[in-house]
Length: 88
Image 1: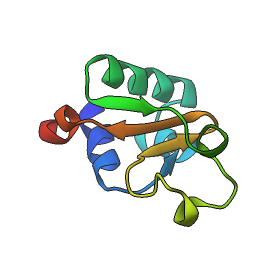
Image 2: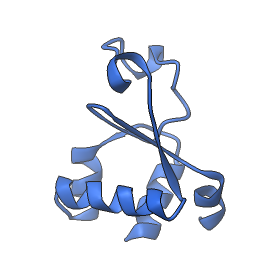
Image 3: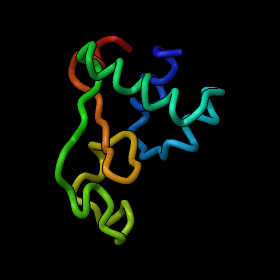
Image 4: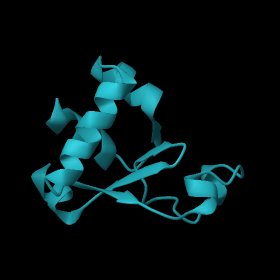
């Protein structure tokens, strides 16, 4: 399941928690735990900053993080690390 999650994130598009959780067949709470586990292992990093904690209201096309973030939820933006990209 973790490998599937990493592959999905590698696609370079923004996913919202609900979408990822549904695709993986887990709850959003379980998805959050998976993301945090991948971060602890060095495969993901949580990106801080961004407009309004990651959501500026202008949409992803106007976001300065466009193309680098993988998962967006209020206050949470995750991106693959080099280790994460190499693991795929």
